[in-house]
Length: 231
Image 1: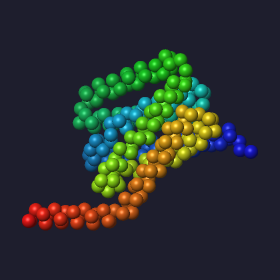
Image 2: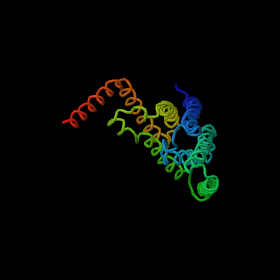
Image 3: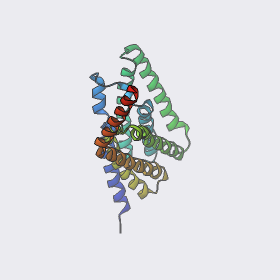
Image 4: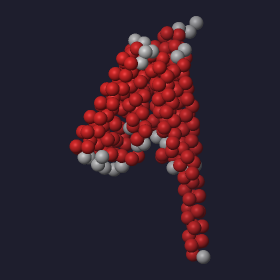
């Protein structure tokens, strides 16, 4: 007989570990941004800010149920999201300190108002669960927006592979947790996220293994264009 409570406990602990890894994956590109090697625009604005609101919703959802392991995981994700968004805004505004401070004040004011609304206005945690589920689905879909470009140009580097790997492992662990608790708000976004991350990893692997062929095709196309121009 499977001990469902034990499976749920261990899957939440594993999910927390992979979630922290997922939250830390933007560190390397952000270091490149800070050093001036990359533009801040390599990150979609939607991805930066959904990574604040999604863990915020989940942290409120779990604290209302007094479930502290997933609550801790969501708080870690929220903290990392706030740190990265603060850095993002600073470089997005071309290091303008005044504008940056104004934006940070506005961001935290919205955050505080949103937090108050979640804790004291919404009558039931099921509403928060639904909102968290929707934000989780959006978070899952957002990194896949470069897939069309990958298919057109073969630029597999546009797929954030470590984000996909940690995201897939994290989603799998939390999917098991949701199944153990029979929590539909957990099952849907994590099931969808797992499917999307598997697809992303498969696409990345395919184009990575065929990268030399893609280069040859591009060279042939350039030669044909040159020949056409000569004629």
